[in-house]
Length: 123
Image (tube, rainbow, N blue to C red; front, side, top):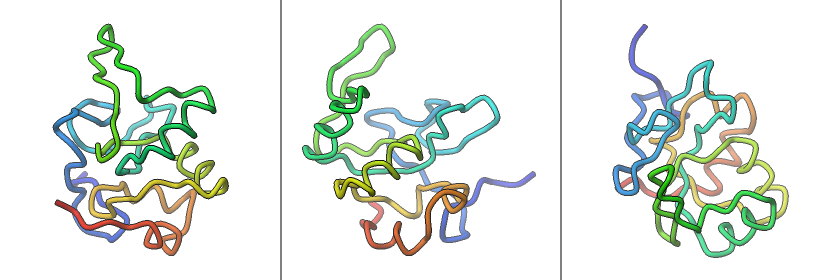
Protein backbone atom coordinates (compact mmCIF):
# COMPACT_ATOMS: atom_id res chain seq x y z
CA UNK A 1 0.00 0.00 0.00
CA UNK A 2 2.92 2.38 0.57
CA UNK A 3 3.47 5.22 2.97
CA UNK A 4 0.83 7.93 3.38
CA UNK A 5 1.47 11.08 1.34
CA UNK A 6 1.21 14.72 2.33
CA UNK A 7 -0.44 17.55 0.40
CA UNK A 8 2.84 18.14 -1.47
CA UNK A 9 2.88 14.56 -2.77
CA UNK A 10 5.83 13.40 -0.67
CA UNK A 11 5.91 11.03 2.31
CA UNK A 12 3.85 12.24 5.26
CA UNK A 13 6.12 13.63 8.00
CA UNK A 14 5.53 13.55 11.75
CA UNK A 15 3.46 16.43 13.13
CA UNK A 16 4.30 16.18 16.84
CA UNK A 17 5.65 13.73 19.37
CA UNK A 18 5.28 16.24 22.25
CA UNK A 19 2.40 16.52 22.68
CA UNK A 20 1.78 13.15 21.03
CA UNK A 21 -0.78 13.73 18.32
CA UNK A 22 -2.65 11.98 15.54
CA UNK A 23 -5.83 9.93 15.60
CA UNK A 24 -3.66 6.87 16.17
CA UNK A 25 -1.41 8.76 18.64
CA UNK A 26 1.64 7.98 16.55
CA UNK A 27 2.69 11.59 15.93
CA UNK A 28 1.36 11.61 12.35
CA UNK A 29 -1.80 13.02 10.81
CA UNK A 30 -2.62 9.79 9.04
CA UNK A 31 -6.17 8.54 8.83
CA UNK A 32 -8.33 5.51 8.25
CA UNK A 33 -11.96 4.46 8.07
CA UNK A 34 -12.21 4.55 11.89
CA UNK A 35 -11.14 8.24 12.03
CA UNK A 36 -14.60 9.80 11.86
CA UNK A 37 -13.20 13.28 12.67
CA UNK A 38 -10.64 13.12 9.84
CA UNK A 39 -7.68 14.38 11.94
CA UNK A 40 -5.41 15.15 8.99
CA UNK A 41 -4.27 18.79 9.23
CA UNK A 42 -1.04 19.43 11.12
CA UNK A 43 -1.49 22.85 12.72
CA UNK A 44 0.53 25.15 14.92
CA UNK A 45 -1.87 26.28 17.64
CA UNK A 46 -2.41 29.97 18.32
CA UNK A 47 -4.22 31.67 21.20
CA UNK A 48 -6.86 32.99 18.77
CA UNK A 49 -7.48 29.56 17.29
CA UNK A 50 -7.64 27.84 20.69
CA UNK A 51 -10.20 30.42 21.87
CA UNK A 52 -12.19 29.96 18.65
CA UNK A 53 -12.18 26.17 18.99
CA UNK A 54 -13.28 26.42 22.63
CA UNK A 55 -16.13 28.74 21.58
CA UNK A 56 -17.27 26.04 19.13
CA UNK A 57 -17.39 23.37 21.82
CA UNK A 58 -13.98 21.79 21.23
CA UNK A 59 -11.76 22.86 24.14
CA UNK A 60 -8.24 21.92 23.13
CA UNK A 61 -6.60 23.95 25.93
CA UNK A 62 -7.84 22.13 29.02
CA UNK A 63 -5.84 19.06 30.03
CA UNK A 64 -7.82 15.81 30.15
CA UNK A 65 -5.59 13.30 31.94
CA UNK A 66 -8.20 10.57 31.58
CA UNK A 67 -7.47 10.66 27.84
CA UNK A 68 -3.72 11.32 28.25
CA UNK A 69 -4.34 14.77 26.74
CA UNK A 70 -2.10 17.52 28.17
CA UNK A 71 -4.06 20.45 26.71
CA UNK A 72 -2.56 22.59 23.97
CA UNK A 73 -0.77 25.90 24.31
CA UNK A 74 0.13 28.34 21.54
CA UNK A 75 3.00 26.93 19.50
CA UNK A 76 2.00 23.28 19.96
CA UNK A 77 1.60 21.22 16.81
CA UNK A 78 -1.52 19.07 16.58
CA UNK A 79 -3.42 16.92 14.09
CA UNK A 80 -6.67 18.81 13.78
CA UNK A 81 -10.01 17.68 12.39
CA UNK A 82 -10.37 18.85 8.81
CA UNK A 83 -13.85 20.32 9.44
CA UNK A 84 -12.55 22.47 12.33
CA UNK A 85 -9.74 23.88 10.18
CA UNK A 86 -12.18 24.75 7.38
CA UNK A 87 -14.52 26.34 9.94
CA UNK A 88 -11.62 28.39 11.35
CA UNK A 89 -10.56 29.37 7.82
CA UNK A 90 -14.06 30.67 7.08
CA UNK A 91 -14.03 32.59 10.38
CA UNK A 92 -10.63 34.15 9.64
CA UNK A 93 -8.76 32.41 12.47
CA UNK A 94 -7.23 29.39 10.72
CA UNK A 95 -4.03 28.30 12.41
CA UNK A 96 -0.82 27.80 10.46
CA UNK A 97 -0.35 24.47 8.71
CA UNK A 98 2.71 22.24 8.37
CA UNK A 99 2.27 21.09 4.77
CA UNK A 100 4.80 18.25 4.99
CA UNK A 101 2.82 16.77 7.91
CA UNK A 102 -0.69 17.37 6.53
CA UNK A 103 -2.26 14.31 4.91
CA UNK A 104 -2.98 14.42 1.17
CA UNK A 105 -6.65 13.70 1.88
CA UNK A 106 -6.96 17.31 3.06
CA UNK A 107 -7.10 18.27 -0.62
CA UNK A 108 -10.52 16.63 -0.81
CA UNK A 109 -11.82 19.39 1.52
CA UNK A 110 -9.74 22.49 0.83
CA UNK A 111 -7.44 23.81 -1.88
CA UNK A 112 -3.67 23.61 -1.75
CA UNK A 113 -3.72 27.37 -2.29
CA UNK A 114 -5.61 27.89 1.01
CA UNK A 115 -3.26 25.54 2.83
CA UNK A 116 -0.18 27.24 1.37
CA UNK A 117 -1.55 30.64 2.42
CA UNK A 118 -1.32 29.36 6.02
CA UNK A 119 1.88 27.34 5.68
CA UNK A 120 4.69 27.34 8.18
CA UNK A 121 8.09 25.69 7.79
CA UNK A 122 8.47 22.15 9.07
CA UNK A 123 10.85 21.72 12.01
